[in-house]
Length: 358
Image (cartoon, rainbow, N blue to C red; front, top):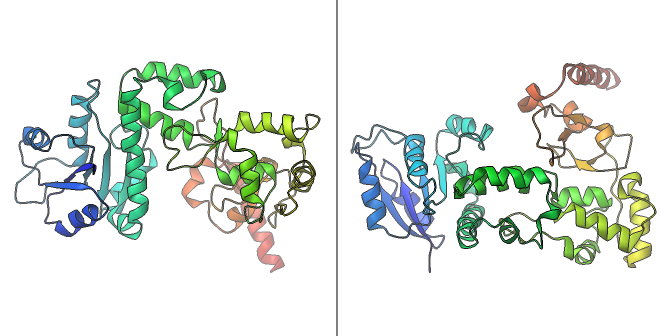
């Protein structure tokens, strides 16, 4: 059965409606009025709504609506705060500035599950569908499993989680949106108890371009994350990776203490995978004891070589870094307020040196 999507826009957007329908959804277009209660009549008529996509600006249409998407979203969130009838809300707009404002701190404004511009939607509609479906399924999973974290994350027990993750979910209580939002933006996406494929590659020291990369992934399959959002993000449990390394590769030396060549040498020897290519350092890096990735380029770096981003991290999250190469290429501008004065000065000096040396 097709998911039902309520598309809220104040202008004639039949083409956008048809685009969403072309993805296999059942879509109803709602042009908001000045009476917000009309929205709930629409929801009553369009029973079983699975998600809603909202344009940011809703006050330009013929129905004289006097509120924009955040007000509408706040009304919906308040109504369904604890009644288990909540559903994903997506902000999609032509107004890039407004989208950027929300995207800067998506987890604190407590309204939308994710945001994107209409151009981003048009450029990659298949990704939009995959992401939206993942959020819809997550809401259903949370409802079905009655907020049981072990079932939601599909783990045997909660001992694999940092204690503060568990305490935070307890504080959230029975709010579906808040739990989904917290797990997605604070646990699944960041580097921490879970890691993505780029970080996995860096920590194993192996290039993803290796012919035996898929065979290596098969070897660590038990560490693959299979809970909510795993249909959208590939993640691995770092705790299980360490256990696999100790039991299958060597208990004598931890991954962190070895460089890429040493890690690959052991993997080849123990697993019989001869076609693994070691990762190499970026131009300005010193160490190949890779453990994270550059925030911009996604290239592997040792935090020792990185420029740390200064922001608040949860205890289970690892710090984020820029490589020196990305900094010299001027890619840190968006994050300039998260870089220390000392690092900014060092970057300026390196830029001057690079210009002198040609």
